[in-house]
Amino acid sequence: MGSGSRIDHQHHSVAPTRGTDTLVAEAAPLTIEERAERAEVRIIDTSAEDAPLNQFYVTSSDDHMVFLPRRPDVILGQVTDEQDALVQVGGNIESHHVYGDVRVTRGPSGQPEVTSEDLQCLCPDLHDGGDASTCDRRAAMANLIQETLSSRGHTAVDRAAAQEVLNEVAAEHAASIAAQDQARAERASQPAVRSYSDDMDAFQEAYDQARARRNAGEALVPYMTENATGGLGARESGRAFGVEIEFDYPPSMPQSERQAANQRIARDLHAAGIAPDPYMHGWHASAREGYTDAPNAWRLERDGTVAGEIVSPILYDEPQTWNNLAQVCEIVQRNGGIASARTGGHVHVAVPDYDHTVANHNQLINTVAGYEDVIYRVAQNPGADRHRGLEWCTPNSEPSRPYTSVSSVQSYNNSHHIGLNFQSVSGRESDHAEFRMWDGSLDPGTIQAQVNVSLGLTNAALREAGTTPAPPPQRVGHHRRARAAAGQRGPLTGEAWTNTTRSFRSMVDRIFSREENRAQVAALFAGTRWHDGR
Image (cartoon, rainbow, N blue to C red):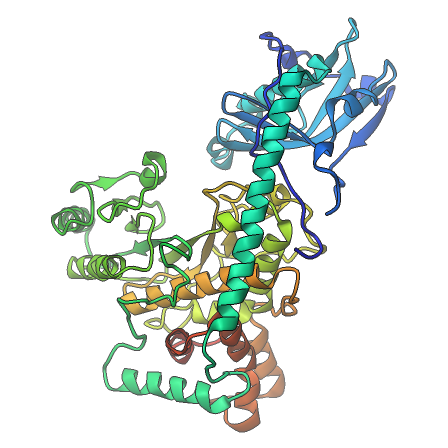
C-alpha cells in the first residue's frame, strides 16, 4: 500500500471481562503542586506501517469505544508510586469523538486511577461555546480505560474477541486494497482521450464551446442524466454522494414573504414526490433522522446563515437522482429563491474504501492542496462575478508532515469553516468527506460538475496513494498574484495563456478519464475567474 499507512482500530471493540460500576474517574485530580513533585512518562501512538496489530488494545462498553496506544500491561508497567503515565487516547463516546491524554496514577490500594481533565470532546455543546467541564463523555472515557486497566489480564474470552477484531480489520484492509487495485485497473482500461496537458487544442475546444453556449444564451455547463459521472458515482462500483443546496431570497423580499416562500417550497417538494412531508425542518434534521438512499428523502431545513438549505438523501449516479436534482433547483427558483453571495454548496463523498490506511487520507488532502487554486476557481458560481469568499471554506492547512493516524486526520481537519471537512471520517463503513469550497448554485449542471470534481479527486487519491506523489501545493490566490507580479492585464494569449491554464489541465487529466467530464469542468473554468485568496 505504500509508505505511511497504518491500522487505527478506533472503531473496533474488545469487551473487558470485568470492571467496576463506580465512577472512579471523578476522583479529585492532582494539584499543580502535587504533579510537580511526581515523575511522569507520556505514552503516545508511535506506530509504523509494520507495527504488529496486537500492539494496540481496543476496548468497548455499550457505545463507548477507546483506542489505547499500548497494551494495558505495558501502560501499567510505567505506573509506580512515584511516577504517573500520561496516555494518548482517542475514541467515540456516545458517537462523539473524544481525544487527548488521560493521567494514570497508582491509588492507595495499588489499583490504577484514571483522570480525564486533559481530554477534549468534539460534541455540539462545546462547538456552541459550552463549558468543557459540563461534558460527562470525558469522564465516561476515563472510566472505561480504568475498567480496562483494572482487569489487568487477558482471559480466553478476551483473546477470542481480540482475534475476531483482528480478523475483521484484516478483511476490511484487504477490501480497501482490492478497491484501490480496481480503481487502478479501471483507469488503465479506459479508452485513450486527448490529454489536456499534452494537447492544448483539446482544452481550447472545450473552453471555446462553453463560451459560445453562454454567448448564445444557453446553459454554460452541460447537464447529463445518464452515466453523468462516468462510473465514479455508480451504485454498484462507485461511490455514494450527497449534496446540500443553500439558497437565499432577494434582499428586498419582506420576511413574511420569505416565510411563505419556504412553506411553498416545502409543499412543492412533497407534491413532486421528492420530500417525505410538506414541512420545513430544523437544522441538521436529516442527520438526526438518519440518512437513507430513498429517492423521496430530500428535506428542506433551516440554516442560520441563509434562507434555507435542501439536503439530499444518499445519492448514486442514476437518472432519478439527476431528475430530482433538476426539480429541486426549479422549485426553489420558481418560488423566488436565488444563489446569493452568502450561499454555499456542500458535496459529501463516501470513502469507506479508504479504511484505516492513512496514506489514502493524506493523498486526498495533499491532492486538494496541490490543485487548491484551481479548485477554488471552479468552485465559483458561474452566475456570480467572483467566489463568495473563504469564511466558511478556508483551505485546509497542509500537514507539515504526513498524518500518522486516521484519528489525527479527523482531529486536524474537522470544522464547518474549512474546505475539506473530515468530521465524518474515522475508519467506519459510513465514512464520508465533505467538500465545502463550492459556491451555492441553483443550476443543475453546475452542481453536477461540482459533484464530479469531488468524486474525481476522491477516486484519484485512492488510486494514486503509495504510487504517485501528489502535486506540490499551489495555494489559493496563486494565479492572481502571479499575474499581478508579471503585470498581466486583460485576456491572455499565447504562452501566458498556456501557462495560466497548465495546473487546471493537469488536474482534469488526473481526475477524469472521460471527455464528457473534462468538458463539463472546462465549462466551469470558462465561466469563472481566479480567486484573489481572500
